[in-house]
Image (cartoon, rainbow, N blue to C red; front, side):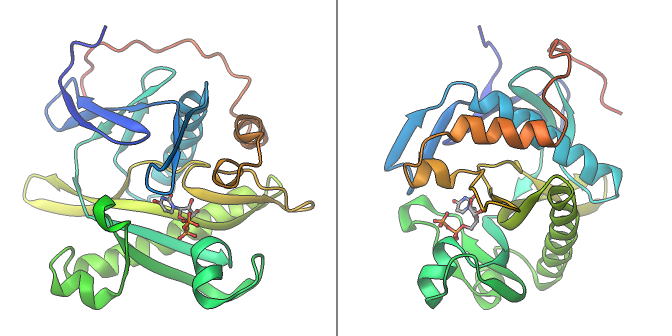
Length: 254
Ligand code: UDP
């Protein structure tokens, strides 16, 4: 079915060559993975939901002037994106203690942090994505000091936007991960938000019950992962739309 050139296959997504130079197609798979792929299952429909949720988030980020790689959704599982040079960092922003920071620093999960905290993890599966300091990032040349400033400014803006967005639909944004890339436009290079933002990459807790509505349901064998993702989509008002695909043919990218 796919005669397009496959550029890269990750754990949850595939990147194909796009219809125009400088574009790619990002395909969302149904694979759920955790602990660096040691736990792996197919969750029917997860890719479709993440495609829609990430589309919604990135469209809104673009609309408020936060630059991203996102152009538009093409169909149920795919979106057209700008090709960027991915910076090999997972940029995590935390508002509430959970997951690895709770373990590392002995904090009780659910404790509000004194302020939002940004962490960097070096993207390297063989090393299990180790946490690194700004010193490592600049010394090893993964990003320049100026780029790191831009990344942190973007991360804070995304956190402020997402916190408000989710609070408005009764969800607490505990933490999330973004990836950033270099977008080259002629002589100019800009740092933009890339990859995806979905319940796979965020911790989302119901504001009243603290119910988990994210990938921790899978990581911690709680069940109900798909239902939780559906609920996130429903609350954001993006489920009951007409799902007719928009077609996958080449389109002129402005
Ligand atoms: N995260 C992610 N991909 C990763 C690691 C973490 O999207 O490879 C997200 C995770 O979903 C959470 C945040 O980053 O929203 C912080 O994750 P943490 O460091 O607590 O690690 P975890 O407990 O997921 O191992």
